[in-house]
Length: 319
Image 1: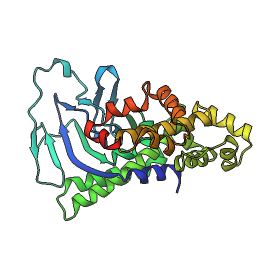
Image 2 (image 1 turned 180 degrees about the horizontal axis):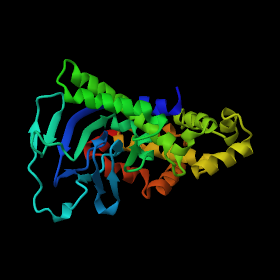
Image 3 (image 1 turned 45 degrees about the horizontal axis):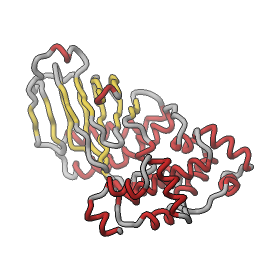
């Protein structure tokens, strides 16, 4: 199984599509921050809208065919493009629940909306997101309006939109299964069509590096040598080290440490293991060495981190 499939499979993703928005004139859709394990997505079927992230973290126009994904459930606002700031009140929204997905609409029944958007969620086990989800940006957009490499993704979106409009037998189940497939396809499109910054995800675009990355993901506690990883990539030690660092912006040793620390964060948040046990599970024979490495990574020691991130009763059971 390739690295991306391995990471997606580990998340046990389940998709769902539960809303179709049909808006005109002035409108605003304010989406609050979601709990871990919930990744919202929006597909612009027709028209345009604006994405606004809180605190000036992002501002982008979304066009027909764009798919917006917010991996960590970040708060965001979608609104109409033109003159929203001059409208005193948005047009009233009506909701219809007689189809496979809910429909929200603020235009008369015989009037064509300015924008149509499908909205749904990818749900996964939040305890398994330490690498893939955390390696993604707060949001990303995959434009599917053109390009032969995105033909299958466009076809999937069209099928989802088609099923969402018609109350046929099994429509909801079909839509949710298509939504689950959408997660993998949109991530592949993101990796294949956009210039990635240096980092762990950039390694997925290199066949030799994927082998080394997969090995580290499969067994982060192993005492990996650069020569071991280079052998998996079928490269010399020096060539592998240079290529890995050039692509990811980190040395293989630094990347392994990062993966170990992400795993340690996950285990500490669970609160079910002692610091010593966590140290052993991520490859540190000395608890003192683990404490130093974790403090450099998180800014606090592992004991303090666990106390601040799990409930007191859970922490007491792990002592």
